[in-house]
Amino acid sequence: MSQISIPLNIKKGRLVTSKKVTEAINSYVSMLMRTSRHITSIDPEFGFVFNNLKFENFNEKEGVVSGSDSGSNSLTDGLYGKKISGTSKNLNTFAAELKEAISQYEKRLTDVSVNMTYIREERRIYMNIKGTILATKEPYRYATTIKVWH
Image (cartoon, rainbow, N blue to C red):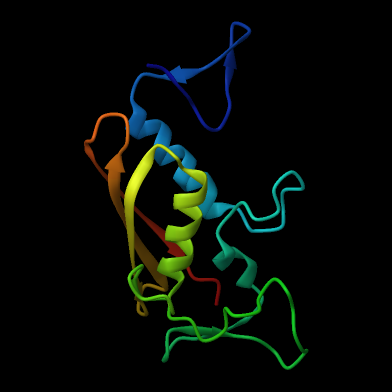
């Protein structure tokens, strides 16, 4: 079964497809992770909320994001104090937020788990996503990094 490639690409008047479901899922998860929430008008909840925090204060010692004293903001409520490093089993982590987004938007995966590790010296967050491809029951693994903005 062919999968639509992301980003969308057209050749000879047709959408480019991929025979490999893993490649298509990787592309979709990558797009989901790099999209800020409330940026797409058709579905404001699409994306990874961590990207909405680029202008907030990042406490490297504690591994948390905190806001300024400018008051409440519906985009960031409940996010301050969440740990960057951790697994999706702990609800007080951004890994849990990412797992929720993947579970909601990538229906080809089941049993999703996410592990995020912040490496202070590199200013990078290492992310490992695991799950099962629903159609084939094969294990799924995807690893990537995000550069921290401060």
